[in-house]
Image (cartoon, rainbow, N blue to C red; front, side):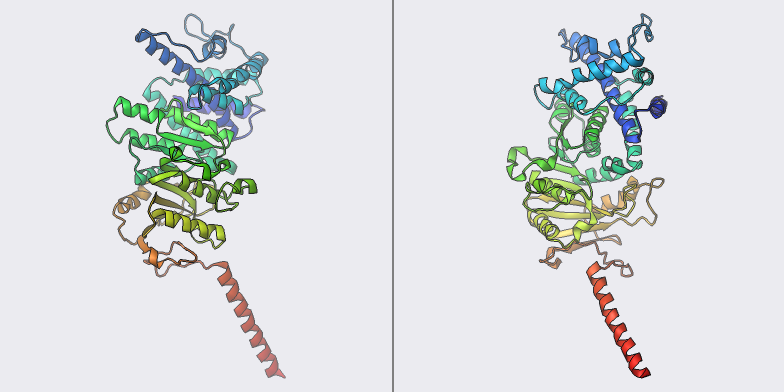
Length: 485
């Protein structure tokens, strides 16, 4: 039922002059879904308060409630077309009254971890892009038919929303920044194995895939008490996101999966000076896939001991600093991190190996990230003791990955099984720290079990060989000329 509703909304947005891409489709769908969710949440809370003999203080003022402006009803429960705003009247109300009203919640909220603050943050960053008030009326009518009050409804909506995020990633450009394959995320969560009571952090939260999957994992890890569930709701999952669109997608994704007021802040994680991080700020678990290939300005680099313009390298320093002693991490990063010879990469590898136990490196095949040509690895480490031995696993699927043939959990089943004991196999091996070059700290993935494997040489080695061949060619040419004389 809900799948067709989402398709119908996309079809209406496709016709509208103000909405031009997959990214904007999900942006506009998200703010409308959020307000419908908020209305259902308020109804639930009011019912629970009345059953307990208490009075419920509504969050939203009467004139801005869903049933007043979005879906006024007649006595028989049908849309009241006489009371329902439409056309220019609806667009003017949304743009000039509703959004400014909701935006004020940010200043009036008691703290950032409240639903009031989230309302203000979301509507401070977004605007209504739907140009036609008639199109907007059609969308509101469809969304009014969605329900957020039962677990079954939320479950179906969360899956459909995930599919929209995935499609947005497949649409390319910066949409891919928000989507990490869920099979990979689930595998990382299984290996890191969070427990109830752990504080879990993602400073590059995107669509909140890591936090959502960690929540699902913990929900099924044991029979949860009321206290456990409250801890998961309020004191377990934390994130930061720089981009406005990703921020609302992350918030909405967590809400649909059952977290009422997600602890996600709209801020640039890298703008913090990591030397100011105190013990009270730290986390037990870090799960993340920081952006690939970004370039940070000099003033941002000043917040880090190891200066580099590479966004992912700054995030890795950020994550190491944010981990508690004995804290655990699973972080996706470009595989060039393992072998780059620049000073920043060498210094960062040294920092990681000396301050953390880098116990596992998962080498992923090309095509793992749809639309991104980069090769990646996952670093699994524990903070507080230096690395003594690294276990490598090279995922060799024997097929090309892509949009129609994505990575799945079964592909990673052997890795999960072998990682528990870090056993050797055709695809896995271990390296002792004493065998790692103490000057370069090169951690390149070189599977010793594949002798016939073509190992790509570094550019400087290739250039040296070309120079040598040129010199030999010159000698041969000279010898031929001398002979002909």
